[in-house]
Length: 259
Image (cartoon, rainbow, N blue to C red; front, side, top):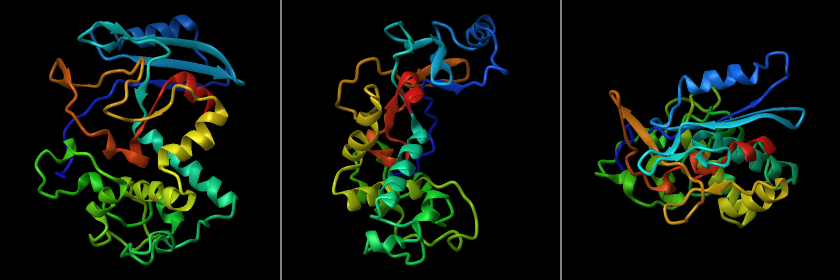
């Protein structure tokens, strides 16, 4: 896998909880979003709720520029690193069930992992010292276009020297959450996507949330773009397997309001 440093802009969504004191009028919010999004730009979906009641729900811009498909509240967007919230809660569910502990060494659940001083709580809090796998240059040309199993993603960084002693520093690291996803699989006996569906998505009625797949037809999925100067271009292809438990989920603002 090559160092992943290309620009990849996915259409954005916004899900807000408001206490009403700071809530702008519907017209003000409409003006805010229409000033940034149009039929000729990648779009967004916006939702505001108060005490569980939706008080603003609209979409702006385009879900697909080539086919001129407008964005709508039901549009499905890449969650990117918001995926980490779901991974963290899954770990805490397993903690509450007594199946793992925050003080567990990673080696307890991944015996062949070389670093013997990283705890689960270090992974959750980005204090592990691991090298971010998205910043590792392996010399693999177009490696981002290949499919990876979780263990193959771990192999990208597992033998690299730690950047600092675990627990002594904070540094945002996607590798931490790749390991957490794999630990969820090892402890639960289910795949990451199976665990989330059974323990989070189904109980909450999140029917528009998915584990990303390049093959699965997902209705209302937005296309991805990046901006080159003043021109929008289609996002470069990355295998959906790369995000995994650090960035591999898709959802809508409606489902995030349930979450």
